[in-house]
Image (cartoon, rainbow, N blue to C red):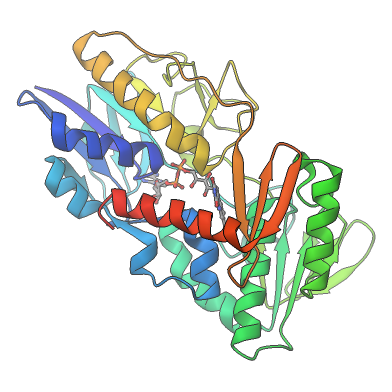
Length: 362
Ligand SMILES: Cc1cc2nc3c(=O)[nH]c(=O)nc-3n(C[C@H](O)[C@H](O)[C@H](O)COP(=O)(O)OP(=O)(O)OC[C@H]3O[C@@H](n4cnc5c(N)ncnc54)[C@H](O)[C@@H]3O)c2cc1C
């Protein structure tokens, strides 16, 4: 009997659980370890923040998925792994042995580089923390977002839309960004989203955050931005787990993977999504789209590792379509350096997101 442990209910593991419903064999034991029974879908974080979706509409019931796939659900957080002894330790003191293990545990939204951030930051990852944190953002009169990428700007605009439709017109929302907004999408897109954010009343500070005191965010040009809630969305950071384990990581602490989504030094350890870095494609974006695309490859390779079959390589796409919600059911679509703002882009995003939840029984 072989034991395969999936750690985290991220996008790629959802795909594996769904496949397991049809393909589970008698001589194998599958276990999913997740801190929560629910997997909250980040594609709908903005819509939940704006009040478009209910909590139930944005989450997948991992217990129901595990029940139908014959997988055991252990509701815990994995703290460390010993890849030589092939066991792992959870926060509840459980020690679990495995033959094959796979990580899809996402990333963190904090940064050790900003002094004072850890004390003040509102962590929305791991993603089961998201709902409680949004309640705080709804109440907060002054909210500061740190980061100029899509997660930060989308959340700022969605929160603004919620504030406007709930008569909190006097609440301020700031975005502090050390590089141009959506810089990677090119200067024309960056200018477009900057204009849109300004027109919606977002206060933009093009500066680098140096430190955070109890009441102010301090920047490198000596601006002090008052806040009641501050949230770091300046790019994904490595989960702490790999730091306390004997697995190879990149300089930032993400699990180092080969193209077969295998740990570079332990072939029975796999990884997918934000928590891993591909040694051959280190600049692959860490987003939900990548994690979804890795699902079928990960599934094939977990079975191949178990049955001594053929491993398949993962090749990241050069470009991908991205749609951010910018409030009032309007979407901001980007593809390479092309971008447009429209209602149908939001409807397309809504269709993709609702279908994703539906596919996993939400
Ligand atoms: C506000 C916001 C909006 C975003 N919007 C989009 C978007 O619209 N489109 C897009 O493509 N990307 C978006 N992203 C990025 C996206 O959230 C991530 O890239 C994506 O969720 C990564 O998926 P994943 O499968 O790696 O992990 P996740 O979806 O984060 O899932 C990881 C799971 O592992 C669990 N876990 C964590 N640690 C442990 C542990 N130690 N033990 C056991 N379980 C653990 C977590 O609870 C979680 O259930 C957004 C990010 C943010 C912050």
